[in-house]
Image (cartoon, rainbow, N blue to C red; front, side, top):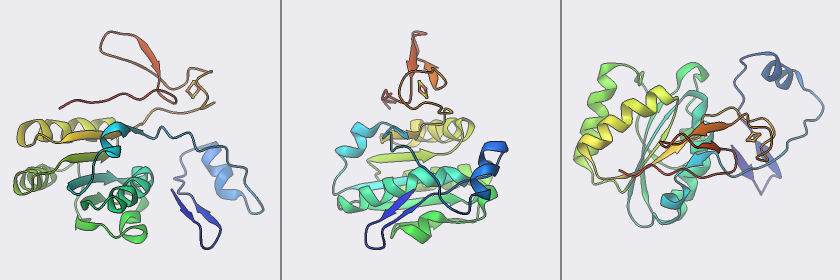
Length: 194
Ligand code: FES
């Protein structure tokens, strides 16, 4: 989630869901981490060209983890970054803790109707150049509907596929594009054009 150069620390966020993540939780000596693979987000091309403008980030639960680096990257490029956070089951606002972004809200459940109103109000009140959505596919779908209705922003999405090898070999991360062609999402960028 974050590299702290000054203190020689790599900060990772793990949500325990099953045997593998439980094993990570139990580690008390050392942990071998392979990576990074640089494909946690779809739409990196939009991130790279976003400078001196307004950005909206919507992140829920453990999917805040890829958002932290992205928010800091956008801030470094002189953007104003507004964030809507739903802490979800993590019960933690990582974005507030690890970035200096402007938190619009961190109290709402983003699956509730009130959140739709907040998305609408935010998208109508500011001319966002980019909207980054880090959350489940269901949440991404909800937010995309709003973005399509109320904004012309480019959209960047968290890559939610399970990763195994991360090398483009095993096929665990395959998604099919609109033509049905399988794409290994650990290695390939997919863009959503608004
Ligand atoms: S994770 Fe193995 S091919 Fe992508």
